[in-house]
Length: 256
Image (cartoon, rainbow, N blue to C red):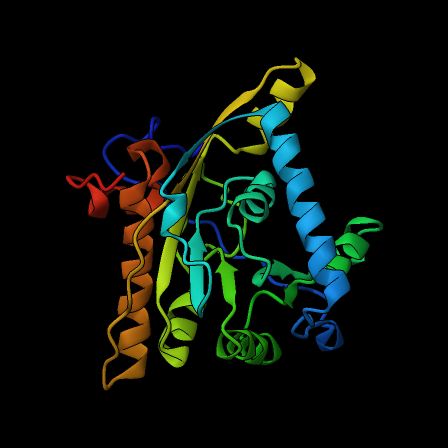
């Protein structure tokens, strides 16, 4: 059963229930040390990813200069497919960029080892992961950039799903700015089908302007309003067909 904006032009799709991690392993969550060897590995790995993207992807970059070269920052992104993360590593140009990734990937042979060598922040989904929260706050306090997909997974509806509150909570708690990064064309089916046919996939990678959430006396209200602001900002930066559940709220504005 398809659930897309084209099939339901009069109303946006609804978000399916969010996933819950079945296995809790707090011991795997920690802030990666930026040792000399890890910096070198990240630099080489990112350059390799950029080379592969040049071969297999017809990439349109916009606004990459909006990413500051240093300073505490939360990058919020939509999440269409596997290569979102790879493109983010390849083109954000920050060795101190940390990414929040679902803990289930840690158990996949080879992939888990690569991610641990690179250094990521593992998160257990479905309920507040206090250890991950502390780790992200530690990264931000150290002046690093942290990348978060507020949807909490790769979208199942082809566009933006309902945002979770983690990014807004962290931005308010740490009092740091956010920067919106959006992808189009990175759906797994699209990319992998083109690879089978030896065709390059047209993909866009857009970085918007930094913004800051406004605190309120009522923390819950501030987080709720902040989550909405984050998701509307991402939606406005995307074409209408990728705006998902936020299409109606974002209509009439084009910030791309």
